[in-house]
Image (cartoon, rainbow, N blue to C red; front, side):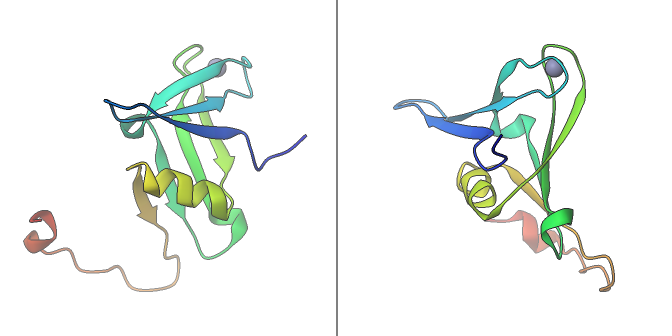
Length: 99
Ligand SMILES: [Zn+2]
């Protein structure tokens, strides 16, 4: 059983990237948009994970994210939360919202 490949991304020609991940509770292969996924990057492998709510059974799924999964998700536009357990929180400025 491999944890490295339990999520895959499918880029469609016209639309946004779709991710496919398996729900460990009901074993459904879920199709998820980038908005349905959350990625948390911590200081170590154990605190780096992605999460989503299974559309089939409603279960909150949290899975470890290796380097490749992090790349996959960030490249596909998944919002990323950087966990900084010891450092002071970064100040948020309104200019962050302007692109
Ligand atoms: Zn499920």
